[in-house]
Structures are given as C-alpha cells and as structure tokens.
Image 1 (spheres, rainbow, N blue to C red):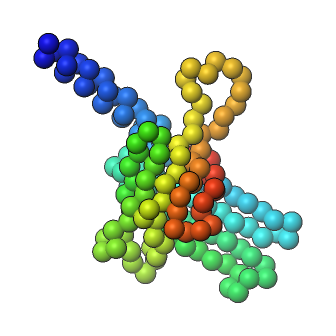
Image 2: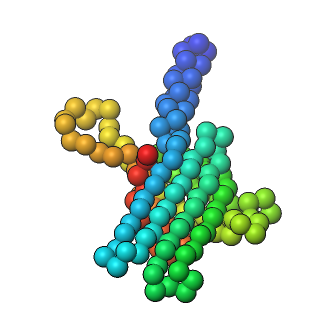
Length: 142
C-alpha cells in the first residue's frame, strides 16, 4: 500500500514539473503603430523560478521619446496560471523599478490531446496586474 501511494505522489509531482518546463523560456510581443511608434514587451522565465521583464517604447511624439522599464522577481505556476512576486528589498534597484507583485498570467499551449492541424502558439495572457496596461496583453514564446 505504501509503495502504491509513493508511486502516485511521484507521478503527480512529475506532471507539475512538466508544466514548469514548458513555461520556462523567453516571451516577446512587438507592436508597431501606423505612426511608426514601437512597443516591445520581453519576459524571461528561468528554471530557478526567477523572471526578468523589459518594456521598451519608442513614441515619436512622446516626452521622452524612448522609455525602458525593467522588473525582476520570482514566479510560480499552478493550474496553468503563473503568479509573479517581487521582493521590495531584493528585486528593486535603480534599474528594476517595475512592481509585478499581484500579476497573474494564463499559460496557453496546445493540448497534447488535440490532434487537429490547428496551430496554437505558446503564450502568456495577463489576467490581472496592478500595472493597468499589462492586463490582457498576450506575450508569445520565442
């Protein structure tokens, strides 16, 4: 009985790790407007549970025209929802000023059971964020 229980726990943990492995990597979204303005979002999820985020905008009529914003912290995944956390003492400095705490993103992949030819790009869809313009942003895995 103990052996069966141990095997079930190991199988359950393996499914959790496979979900994390699929989420790890670089995500990018680049948006260009008809006025040649540029918005770029880059997110890196590392295997050790840390993340780095870079937002770049180049707005021709903006003051200043170029803006760079950075964030870093930790992430966790549960039921295909990635939660982001930033520690005010460790993750903030002169460069990293963005606070991703309380941000959540849905991890979207093609289901292994889906045998159709439909192409579904791996992506993160932000569901919640205290950064108002991050909600509903979809960042695609590169």
